[in-house]
Length: 370
Image (cartoon, rainbow, N blue to C red; front, side):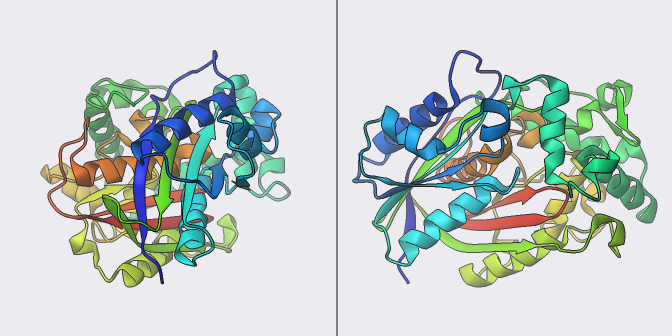
């Protein structure tokens, strides 16, 4: 098989970009990534977006991004796997290069969830649940995350104050990330005093919806960072029929596949970006990737252990950019491995990203290495 390298990457600060159209945002980061890669001839564009049709009333997003840059005759593909779209697009794009179908492709993640009102925003987000058996009856991702959090805390005899350490760490990491939405420190007291969203989860447990775009150029020519392994998996069991609520099955399986392909173990991982749209998901994702033993992540946080997880601030601080999240993660981990500003160089040569759609419905894990 052909090696796949990240030859160029770019991302924009997340937030509320009312002055830009969704295709403008995608084109902006793509142009920057192409410049970073030395302007290679591009064969295809893979666009990850979860809300384009519902929030921006736009289909064929890839074609309009290409048109803004005058990229005529380039193949374009749209990938949608809810907030796990970015990781899925990355795997498909890398697979196209790895197979020899294309020489150079771009992955663009872009979403603008703030183009609609907050109640519409949450309704769009809830379409990641089963529309017939869950969303119709008012089941939301926040409710599912709250159930998993409550059962996790009970099973491993933690207090909510222990879970609050996750958003505190995310705000600490994100405070020094100029690309992040919420760039401020937080204390445990801030988390405890914040509004209750879905018991036991509070406002600080929720990653804020943010507009944003990120891009990576993948080629079969040697670059700075190589894609070593990829794994994707689904969890087909209905949420109400799960045997355990303290594990992300899709993430665990995807990680095992990616690690096997890369020829590594979790001990080799020097930097990781995991999906933490809710605090509990970040905890469970880190454990599923083997960065902590099952049920022990919060114990590590309580002990003051140095965790090289979500140095971007994660979805909690960087912001939940929906379908663009996985592409942001890929850029962030690549820059952490390289020591590119605003990140310090990781203490090792291996990094992983975990991109998830819904409450453990689909997960993608990608291993990057120098």
